[in-house]
Length: 357
Image (cartoon, rainbow, N blue to C red):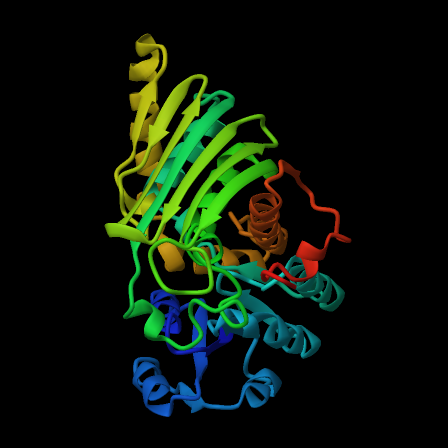
């Protein structure tokens, strides 16, 4: 069983629920937050869980194996480095870092300490995505052709009333960094890492520093082409993926926070093959029936990995690539250029992508 400290009682509340669903794998030892009342309300849900306000004391606690970072983005890197130096594993909410340089440093520290560095991409864990991965493993999908992604959410004055949001210094970016990062990670899980990108970004919805609209085009390592439409000016919150392979097309519903848990459709290009796909899905559904989704699915995979078992793990390298893609999008938009990845680390955008830096 692994002892966990959750740093941050905001999104940390959802993390806590994930750990509590796996009582044989994790024990939440502490909730750390400057708001003692907020932290106390969470800690009351976990037996023996302490309320702490000092990060350094949590990092030094020998009962704690894993530091789970759910803090504002500008704190992720500094706290992760402290945790690795203390010999702790690190789970970190997105975005893991505020620059490529910082993300590279976090990954290097994890390797030097021989500790796990697990970025949170809980969207990967859900029935529809388990189905698609299993169809791919059975050779029923074919090569990636194109994908369309939509992140159309509604964020207004109440959302940006939180002081650190909408500012380059603290949130470190806008919709590309804080919202679309999930759906971009999902497409790379099936199409491979992004190798080329061009983009147009704008701030059209809210009076904030960072972008809240984007139109992005990408090429991936598989050769697949991806278009991503992003706005925080939607009437409601909707995310959608349509992934077209040369043997079938896969399409999600519009669930913004758990697209993998939605009902997906899988349509054969050759209609004579639809029966084979449907039969495979019946077998797959039986195989994945007990697999948890969302945070529970990701935390189970992390525990399996730490136990030395096979696991569908989101790696530190995946986290670095997610940040590198953000930097490439900002670079492409500002330079009106077609940008290739991996990025040359000597580019200024790798050390700081804030405008004017």
